[in-house]
Image 1 (tube, one colour):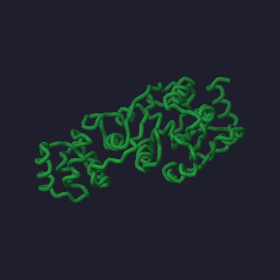
Image 2 (spheres, one colour):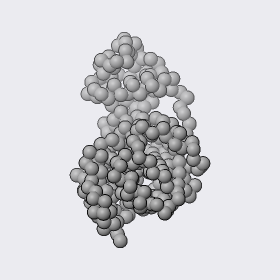
Image 3 (cartoon, helix red, strand yellow):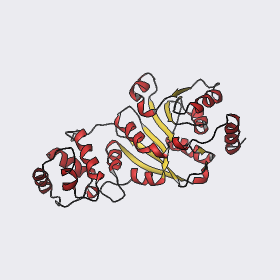
Image 4 (cartoon, one colour):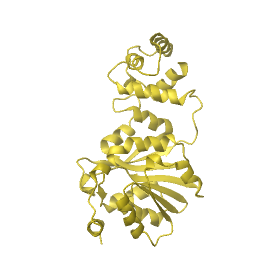
Length: 279
């Protein structure tokens, strides 16, 4: 049975319809699944955490290739499907919980695999919080391979200091090396979303940067710079809750040779780090 008919069979058997509020679109493209597994370089020494497995289409290939797969699924309807579908596999654990509320370090520490990889077809509506959660936990991941909306992929993988970048771009560059892998047409899903998707890979940087004096302050400054991205950095930060003195910021920008009228979107990650350190 091909993936499309298998998916339709499962949906009919369990009386399932895609939950729009959970951003559910079911993947039915075998090439996309196999290319995702290949791109993530999944092997028997890997612990894979899959976020939002849904009907288990991607999971079906992950359990064949990985040492162990931990599925974290929020929708209770999907939990029974996953349990029934993979009852004969002994290398899978299914958790009914919100990935944003799980202690990932605790989850990983109880396992004894040399590599931990995240693989997921992420719900569009919550992509950014999940990505930042995964990065900020500093859990011992080797890589994050995820399918996201193409527009979001463009932003996640953009270069800081360009118009394509957003606040999250700086976090992605700070914690990882981002690469676009391949585009996924909307016909690869049922129901078909209105946009194309992209599979991307974030290779986690193992070494914590030693030249950053205050990470929390750095990302607060970046956040407020992009909350009002059409304003100059001076005006955006002056109106924020960070409490940065305008004259002090002007002095810092002059010291770094940065125009006082600069907007946050024109600054690279290194620029923001230098500004934060001097402040």
